[in-house]
View (cartoon, rainbow, N blue to C red):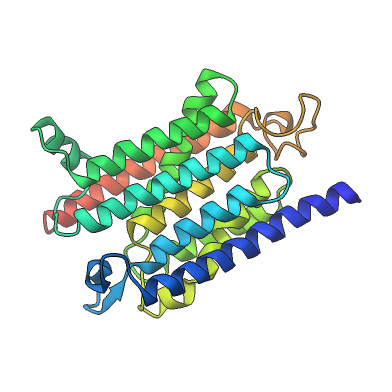
Length: 287
């Protein structure tokens, strides 16, 4: 009973902490935007002026909630803080310095890199990829699992960003994908709860076209969902003892997920990224 109560406490604490920290940060950013309000203003698809404060706020709220959730081992906390903050920072960099860049998709930024130009999109691509691999290495034991975990974390970050094209789409996706994870035991529960709580705090303003997640929020929230997937399906290194059951470890190798589950998620995310890249290039070309 005590252990079950502790698991529920971890999920509830992460959910509430994510919501509270996001709302506090969001309110502070609206009052005093770093660098001035204009820097964080954008015109959305319908021509309305919105701000990007929700992105910075959800990145900070998710990272804080995941890193402080009760019961998570130090490696999980470190991996969560690293992946979410790096994804949010790289996204914020692109939000600010890539605002006027018409190039879209991985291929466009890699082509520019071959020509000697380091675009903000390339910084985001490699920065989030490196952070995902580093977080995966913290959470997994075997080299192949570390690589797959990195792909899942970075791929999830990019997937949520691909959906951030209309009000509420990315936020709704985070809620839809993250909420079932609240039922999982082990680290997957709190790691799912953190982004769900964070995005719930700003989804009303997002839907109301007063703010948007932008690259900072979408990538940070997606990275957190990827961490939850790794915790649920990966072969655990950082949670529980070697004798812990699959359920206690979050549904990973001990429950039949392991490398197969990670590989399936990685393949799906790579396919989604490739499809999204084609759509982005077509949109940039005016088709």
